[in-house]
Length: 604
Ligand SMILES: Nc1ncnc2c1ncn2[C@@H]1O[C@H](COP(=O)(O)OP(=O)(O)OP(=O)(O)O)[C@@H](O)[C@H]1O
Image 1 (tube, rainbow, N blue to C red):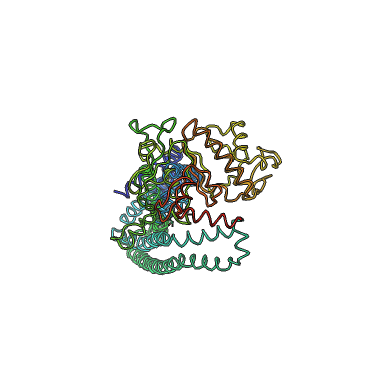
Image 2: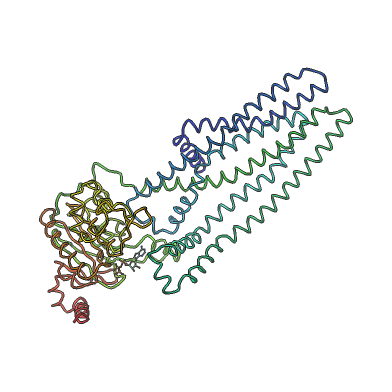
């Protein structure tokens, strides 16, 4: 049933992407394959007519007609096939981007099995267009029926030759299919090797790699990964090549035996010259038909696997795409109570997979444990804590990149899990440590922070001011119209800090957020710029608190920044260990006071 659905997806995709051309291609493919034995029949009838002195017309007529149609169909097949392939490839590629973009969570990026499937679809996308292979098999099947008919017309026993010819063909097809499975099983090695190549060619990491002399070690790991991937593939290729050669020898022996036998029959007057010439001519057809099946069947099986993954991604995307529902609660224009973590536990999907693959009785390791916390409307809240404590995880749950494993995040009492994630994200403004360096025109690179206003030059210019990026834009040769990125004509290269300022400007494009998320967004900035950015954030946060009751959440290791927050939340091992204002936490003399004193002493 699954195979039938996959096959249907393949065929329907082709007809959706290029309806008319696919129909013409079906016709030409079936014609070219089915007509080749008819050509042989025409020749045989003509030979027969010559030996018997009867009319040449039927034989020559059949021969001419089949040659004419085959010639036209053959010359059309290539260009039409290429166009259809290209259309399907474009259609599927666009669909893949849409499907992954529609999934509201990022869980699929962190699931090894899902990551394998996604990278396999990407790698094999070129196969998705090969619908002509499927048609060639259908054509070859038509050819087989004709060939069997002709063989039976000579002697019924000769139909056994086709069975012999199919043996090596099927072995080759199985070989191609087996190698496709091996690629899949070892995809993790390809991902590792490719990741290392990406790191090696990426200019960002180039300096560190050279200074630490890591290139050799990385190359070695990549070589081992590629080796681990190729070794079973090469062994399998060798094995199937031998098996297939043995199969072809078997067919050759059978065919040679049949020809010698039929010559003997003709000499004794029990077979005609036409019969012998037909068998000689059809020998090529038998092996060509079987080869067509062999060449295409394996590829079709592989393409079916790829389409199977494509179908899986479509199903996955449907299951994980938010369907707008009349009953789902609308977002308030302004927050009144605030955002609450209501007894939230959270385990990353990858932790769940590790638990599932290992001892199944072990629950997945939690990154957050029973977090119960109110971020009051209009407040600025800082998350602090050691590396790996769970600060960014809290931020990700607020952005609804994941849903809690237990408990709920509530927006003015309404569970975030019931709210349209896209509508929620439209009300979030965010700046992250890992920001995107969008190599567009500068105005676009900033403007995409709010798609509804990306062309609004005034909004972009004001976001640039708020993000403390004026100095960056002023130094660009054409200001906001400068192309960014040295890999583009006339493109300008930026430093890490300059890119980050543009990312910050992007975060200021939205003017009515309910939540402002700042997860170490100034890590690449100098202290003066950082101070200016946080002063600006403070002003924006106060203005938003008045207009939308927005909550501002900041994650920072710098206590000089943290202290200005209304509420400071100390996170330790996925739990809230302390919570209060700067003064309250200092007075409590706990971990916050200890860390603050430590940092203050270092600056004295
Ligand atoms: N994508 C992920 N998959 C699985 N576990 C993760 C993932 N991201 C983080 N973790 C784990 O969750 C825990 C909390 O990580 P988190 O990134 O929230 O820490 P953090 O407090 O922000 O640390 P830092 O100050 O280093 O940024 C860590 O134990 C980490 O190993």
